[in-house]
Length: 115
Length: 114
Image (cartoon, rainbow over the protein chains, first blue to last red):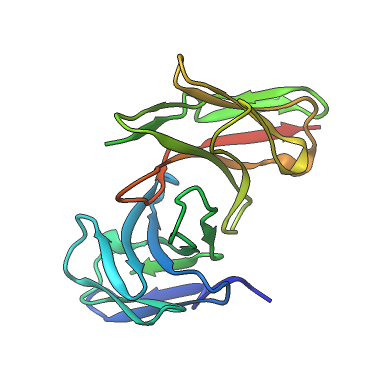
């Protein structure tokens, strides 16, 4: 069983389109994240939700909107895609209620290419 | 704010040789320290982490790391590498309170050659 699963794994789309990436975790964790990895492999936090509440919202264009329907899901919707949005997007989760030293588990990544 | 510096972007090494991947961090508050590995076209997998206690931490796949508070370093080592260790390695820190996302270094590409 995959602990953190995200779909689709690969996505090629045209500029201006709207797309969504879905993420689900079956670990019972209370916190979920979206990270972006650019072409130079640099990883940066985008959003974090704890029990469906947004707790981290980095300087990300408002074309990016996370949605957490429940504790186990955190989806990422992107409007009006731009070439610069091409990257690998990683979903992750952790159990943070009592201790932030717990491991953050990552999904396999979603490779987004905007043409 | 926290920051992580991985001094080497690439480390080429021959199979069965020892390797050290360097990581330095900066933070005004207490942090936990992590090393993750990313194999080609895959997600990130935790190698090891330092929370407290013994400064020498052992992880998976024969890796270990030593926390040095005075030098604010958390270098990763392996005494003998294999071809299969070829991957991208990321050092990361996480605050122990408040905003708790991981802050990553820029990564080190370990290339093991036969």
